[in-house]
Length: 520
Ligand code: ATR
Image 1 (cartoon, rainbow, N blue to C red):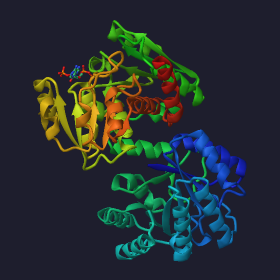
Image 2 (cartoon, rainbow, N blue to C red):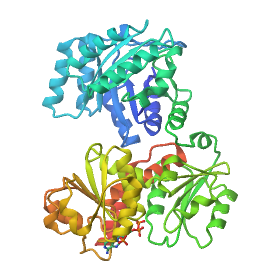
Image 3 (spheres, rainbow, N blue to C red):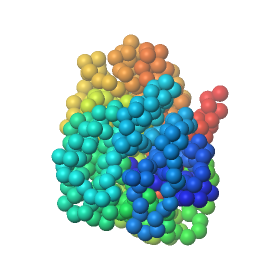
Image 4 (spheres, rainbow, N blue to C red):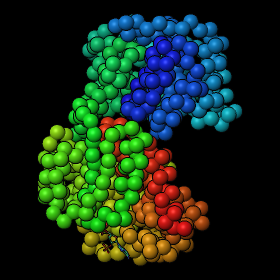
């Protein structure tokens, strides 16, 4: 995750930065020691209004650990410890996702905050941090500091020293490894020019997050790079060809299209146009029923259309007309998203991402087994995503040959429908069309066989709650509706086209409302 610190001294600027950063970052950090007289509750509310998904850290850094940037020192407020504690408590009551307190503030202060969180049944997590603005201790020293932070009962430990030598970055890498082996969440990197490599590598090494700034934004510590540079590094490291740069340089209106056949029933235009309005993007999303795919692709280039969604029956065929294919889409053999980078068309797949994100919001994937019903394109996306997240897919399909072929592709087990009861699994995912409107009273699995699963997910979103999900709910399973996957795959498309977070809750409400009207 990338975190943008909000470090403006003027309150008005801070609000502006919060709104902007919330759309670009995964996390924002409110540096309340730098924001002149900003009200933490109001700043949190502004971030929530700007983005439903952005996480918020509230920090009030001690002067001794304040990370004065190399250029243009920011002025800190002088605050008593009591005032700082009040501020952090207010952050908990205002629903901050994380509060950061330094180890040096002492166990008593840390315990007070923990007990407030418990009393309030708050989901705010505590980051216990340690900074050294003069250098990097030995690895043994860093481990000792890590243990001291961990022993306070911190949810996350943050260790940020200053790199005097390039080799200081290696100590941080070893520290992240050490923390991970203990199953602890850690934020670790080095400050300073020589520590930049650790900022780039932090997430890949396992740091909970890393910091970056908006172009022209105020940094809160030396060595922070812009979010664009950080994202590009991350995507390079992970083999994804994201396209944020081209978006930043695009002038004026941007148009988006859906290519499929048929497209009349698609809810994508409703969802994407609502998102474009909410994101204040000057553009339109239109659906086209395509009979000649090659000409349609030429149209995207010729009319400088920024992005396209691709649906049935073109998800595989379209790959032959694109200039580049992202690594995940290539591995899946299907493209559902095109980004047009000044005439260079790049294909991506967000179906698997949407499914994984919807699932991950409800349960762990790593180490769990999931039954996948079906062996078509959606089943392939599900198996790919589950495996990528460290889970174990098991394929169950009506036609054994197709089921076995998919299972062989992912080197996972296949069971015929009749043997589904023999599988021990935490979740079940239906990727077949059984239960889709108008067959709303059909389901592939008898209700009596559902109680064994913790979670049951259906990729069908019309109806919102399929018979399978209604039965599963009655048996006490957690359920995940297809709507959740649909809006997340759409949100990921918007991110690829614009480099910005989509307002997921709004998208969900928009699609849900339409489907409810349809059902009534
Ligand atoms: P998608 O790309 O949406 O996954 P698909 O490629 O047509 O769609 O795949 C649909 C899957 O649903 C297939 O695995 C199909 O099973 P078969 O392989 O036996 O054809 C499964 N499916 C569709 N209707 C079904 C039904 N009535 N009973 C059981 N499985 C069904």
